[in-house]
Image (cartoon, rainbow, N blue to C red; front, side):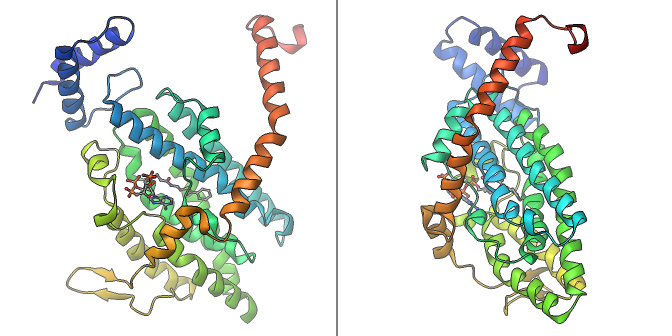
Length: 343
Ligand code: BYC
């Protein structure tokens, strides 16, 4: 394996090459070796480092899908802002939905460091050429769904995303650190909301149980297809983009949720769920993968509604983007450092 100094030299050479000179075949092989050595040594790959085209494409695909999920994910929860049962709950929910917009922002910015602009990615989302998480094609039918999303959906997201803080690509890994901190707060607010309902009237308890019944299985699907059907896992793990397989993280999530459900006095809707002494993990029932693939094809209960609403929001926000660009242009033309009061 190359020493840190050797591959740093090759990666630095790659910077120079990107700045002008054409890399030859020998150079490319050297860059590839330097890249592989850097990944093997758990070094971070940064935007100006040489990287294989397929590594870049995989990152853009995953980061874009992740960013799209954050902004599409604002819709099912925003559905309840006007009907939140108290001012406190409304303020918390508004802050959470705003956080999701912020997560989208960090992630689109991370994708931009790979040379793919936000407009292009949004166009791919709006025209169905890129995906968003399957979970957001399900409806939020009651107030308890806000709690179930926080507890289960944000809980699944944290389980999946904490290892992404160690992703080999620097800007994605750093974005995930902040996102995970916020997701942790989201998960707790969901748990606390469900706890309040569970300890409330029998009708409130039933509402919480119904929400958990509907969100449990789709939450398990968030981790992606089973390992033997996961097209990208092996390569993404070799590149240290993903640190664990889909099934490993799904199992971890189930093991975390079982005792939490008991504390909530709610039941997870799986008759096959039981502790397996030998494995030291919970066994759980089969997941309906036909439903998962069907949602991915656009046939979920809310796919059409989500994309229509997203396109409308984009069109209606055009004047904001124009105004922001005009303001930025005016501000930079008027010279840096000139405050409003001095103008
Ligand atoms: N939904 O080879 P695989 C949030 C696709 S937002 C849709 O295993 P990979 C939140 C996959 O893209 C949470 N598609 O793929 C926001 C691939 O199709 P393509 C979002 C899925 O990438 C607001 C094909 O299936 N989190 O928490 O190795 C409010 C084969 O899959 C899904 C992230 O995006 C799915 N569930 O692994 C509240 C995390 N699963 O691209 C909460 C970052 C798979 O070849 N992403 N597909 O057409 C990842 O960690 C990975 O991309 C995945 C999939 C584990 C999701």
